[in-house]
Image (cartoon, rainbow, N blue to C red; front, side, top):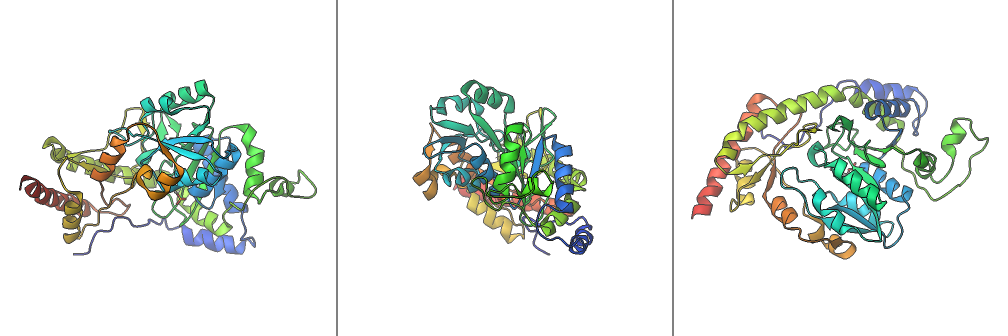
Length: 385
Ligand SMILES: *Cc1c(COP(=O)(O)O)cnc(C)c1O
């Protein structure tokens, strides 16, 4: 039997045609027709005031750090359980990541622990919507407002997901999406910055275009373009945008298919939860997620390596992540922990992410669950011994 990979990119079937169209348009550099189509789609779908394609979510977060003017010593509150880019983007500007613990049910930033982490140097809070399930945004918005700090949503995993009907990425001051190969909607490498405040729009265009006002020049608003401010090259080529547009047009269908697989996993693992062997992901009622990740948390004493190895023996490739940033070498060097991070430590050690990709069959899913059950039996026997 063929092994079941953790991830397999999904193609809508329109990518090749749009790539061919892009080649025929005579412009391969960024901000051509396909980029505009993507911007329009993103602005319509999210209601963000402005969407700008970038070459990655990492790049979008770096733009956000420049836009809110992070200075050396400024503190940025974020969960310890996240991808490195959440922290790196701010460290590049001399900012200090302040790591806060996560919730048991969603693995998101624990909103009840944010306020105590705020100091005079706090510049922003970065909620990460893990697995496309939203953080408790009303509480976070309230804390940010009372303490006069910015909110930058790391919505890398949150495309098409909502919190109280509001699209993720459109709730904070700024939001960032990822279209990396491993995400729901892909362009190989790719991302977008969502801007929800007018005051940032012009500056964002300048930062993205090497510190120049070339965007205004292209619109005919100025008769020449010059170096205006610090910036870099954050825009993707038209080839990336063409590929991405073929995906965005099918974003709703892709999400529906992923949710169907997610829901099926959720039923198939109910029994394991009833037996106290795992915990399933929690989705608060105000959150509509996008089926980005289905994970289980192993009960205490069940050795994860045993489970993963055993699943692999049965041809099922399950994975884990993240090493909490506060315990990583660069996290220790550049960041600071706030309070007890035992939740991040414990949860990150017990998580298993199951294969989830559009095109998986019911039989594939049954094989995954059969392998998981057998692997947990083996780990239980070890625990008893
Ligand atoms: C994938 C991911 C990123 C990075 O996205 P890139 O597009 O690869 O730069 C950042 N944050 C989180 C939470 C992610 O899952």
